Length: 124
Image (tube, rainbow, N blue to C red; front, side, top):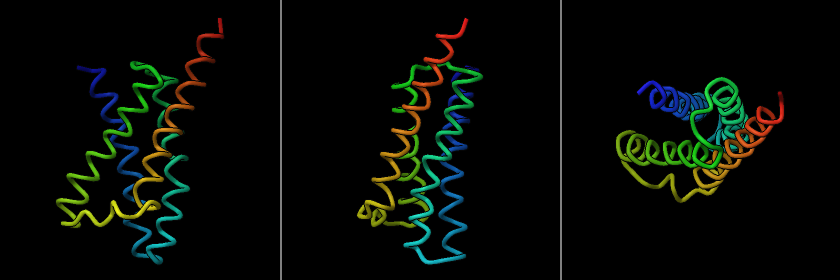
């Protein structure tokens, strides 16, 4: 149970920080600028989150972790953001708003997890 909670907390923090970029950005600038900042912030956030997760916990393999982090973000965006907050699925029409960040979540998590895992195995 502890392992599930640890993985869940990392996924949630990553998703929440990305949501904070959108929430704060919308109040400060245009939606287009907000989405660009979000697309830049997503890999930074998930690189840091996955580095921390793999450095200190490492309960799952890199591919599994990347799929879990991505799946969590998709599920939360569908059920919380689209259905509850926006009451619309229009956000999924925007590659910059959803599909590019989803890809960046997967890639940044996978590659960070892969390299941190590999370095831990190589060190005595």
